[in-house]
Each structure stands twice: as structure tokens, then as C-alpha cells.
Amino acid sequence: MGADGGTIPKRCELIKRRRRRRKLNKKFLRSCQMSTCQMSQQKLKKPIVADRLGRMYSKEAVIEAILNKTIPQSCIHIKGMKDVKELRLTDNKDYKDSDKKGGDAYDDANQTPFLCPVTTTPMNGINPFVFNWKCGCVVSEKAIQEVKSDKCHGCGGVWKEEEAFILFPPHEIAEKYKEALEKKKAKKRKEGEEEKEDKGKKAKKDEGASSLQADPTKTDAYKNLFTSCEAAKNKPQGHWVTYNPLFY
Image 1: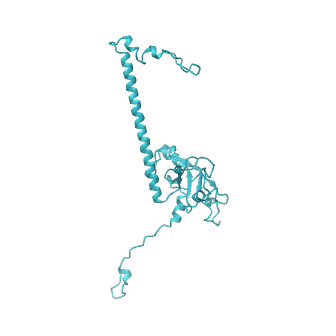
Image 2: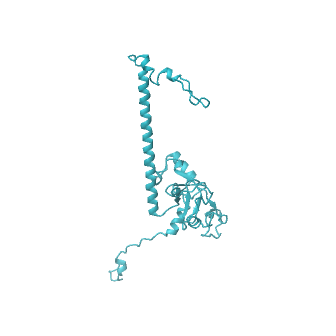
Image 3: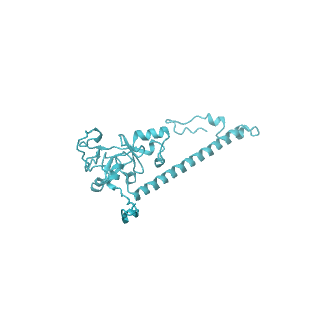
């Protein structure tokens, strides 16, 4: 420490400096996202799927998590395979998997496993990519902007802007995707509740009709006025030949 007659401490030795926070390289972060399964945090393996938030997963990891009920909190919106879409990715023929290369092999960072089928733009995380929920085709945002079309750039099928999602979108767009997903789920819950209520009303109606026919205080003439009577049940039904046979 010093001050013992032998050495004199310096100011930097007496004052503890605050460490500077290192900023993550955004390009490197996005490149990692494009190659990492957001379910298992392992390297993406085909077949690859994506959700309505623009996140990518290995299909095998999603199925395993659903079956074992080990879905992480960050992916809690995925309840089944209907919540993800299998992607139709265009392979880059010039890409060589680093895991299969030798230790002294040259690793070209510009080469990626997938690219845009229209512009051949590499899917490296720097260039925005979009996928079509209808068919799963993945193309670069550059292709959509340069080649205007109402058809899918990948397969020529249906293309709707509201059904197109950016892969790993910016924070602002990601929040919009979350809001849209919550609205979609709320609407589905409401429809389910209404369907359940309609079934309950129908069950009550059927129960009321059967209780009427079983009521001993009512005459047969009165019971025959309703469609729940045996005569009405056994009445001949019209078909494609006699569309309206007018049975009374």
C-alpha cells in the first residue's frame, strides 16, 4: 500500500475507478439472434419455425418443449404448433458450416446459411428479413421495397402486409406485434366464451322441450304443437330430389 517509508502510493492506487460498461455490438447481437433458437438457446437446426413476434426456433426444440411442458417464460405465448409457422428458407450454396470445417479453415463472415431468393442478400442479421405467415416464405425487406407486388416473392401465393412479420424486429415494431397478438388472443377467448354460452342456451332449450313432452299435466294435442313431439321427429325430411316436399 505504501506510506511506510519505502514507497509513495499513487492517486490511481488509492481511488477505485468505476468500470466502464461495454456496449454490445448490435450487428454481432443480431447475427447471433439469426443463428440461435430462442427456445433452447442452441444453434438453429432445420426445420426452422417462427412466431408472430418474429422470433426463430428449431422446430424440434418447440415440439419437445410443448410435449414436456418446459416452455420458458419468454415463449409462454406458444401453446401449440399452431402458434408458429415453418419457414421456407433459401439455402446459400456457398456457405460452409463452421462445425464441419477444419481448425485451420478460413471462415468467411459474409457467408450465411440462408439468403434472399430475389436479391441474394445474405440473412446475416444486418439486413432486415420478412416472412409470410400464409406460406412461410422468407425474403429480404429490400426485395419487397424494390419489387412491388401483391403476390408472395417466394412462391407467388397470397401476400398480405398484415400477415407479414419482420424477423427479430426493432423494439418499436416488436411492441406492436405483442399488442396485435394480445388482441388476437382476447378475440379468440371472447369467441370461445360466446360459443360456450350459445351451447348452454341450446342445452337449456332442449331440456325444456323434453320436459314438456314428459309433463303428465299436458294433453297430447298440446304436446303435438311442438317440434319436440314424436310425430315431428318421425316426419319425412326433404332431400335433393324433393327440396320442399311440403309435409304438414
